[in-house]
Length: 403
Image (cartoon, rainbow, N blue to C red):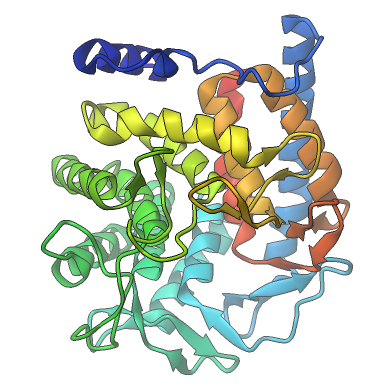
């Protein structure tokens, strides 16, 4: 079912406003004078160029200079100018899992072999066999550093294991995915359907309260898990999670999903996360059909495009307050990729073509990418973290369907 058809069904059912029927190009966005054929040709060119850059520059970078062969782990970050690894202080399980996801999706035998090694390292280095969870990080010598049980980390382990199983059909990956999901449900879940963001190493004490971001990635992880095991069970978890998000995190005036629980002082709204949620929910319409989140997300995205995207400048802002005032004007690469992905979901080809052109011009360079820009387009973070190729990979996965 397409997003438009799903929303039309919901409009009839819930008598939604005309806002939900208007998911075409936002009227305030820059208009393109190109014909549809010209737009499609330009879009196809930009998608091919982005794919070529990813395949020929970014993936080889992380199989080569970006990989610590002795430790069997990806370095946390590389110098943007030279591609050389920055001196390691720690290695995180989440970063290893994101790289495993990327190389599980990447084509070719070399990528598959690299995924094999990453999976082995993830289990060997980060699995907490005593507690049944995952340690957050190890030090430069791969010794345990932070043994916090972190929901964000567990979610990416589930996602990576699901992707790796789809590629390798290795039974251990599926088994580990299911064991980690079981731990999440047994240990992290609260009575009201939310999930603690972090627990003590023995799972006995909450360290951080429920937060939007780890639960969004848990949604992503469970959607991936449902593709390889227990689809009915994961659908049940997903619907419960979505309803909890609507109840405790949706800011009613904007319909945006806030970063912290509603009522938290100095709460933030991140446009990039509204775009990311839209892509996740759209990709599994049958799972979320009839839920409040399906109704609120298009409104959140429209508000975010109005208040959080600088189409004449370097793109998507990092965060706003609940009135729409800028809290953090940094332009982070991940938020740009999620915006492009959402434009593909919405089918807004003119905005997607111009957005891809701006993105390639501002954020990519011959040796990789720029992680963060300021409002004027100047580089404000001069390294390339190992976690960002994941965002480029998920963006690219959404793009071929639009041409």
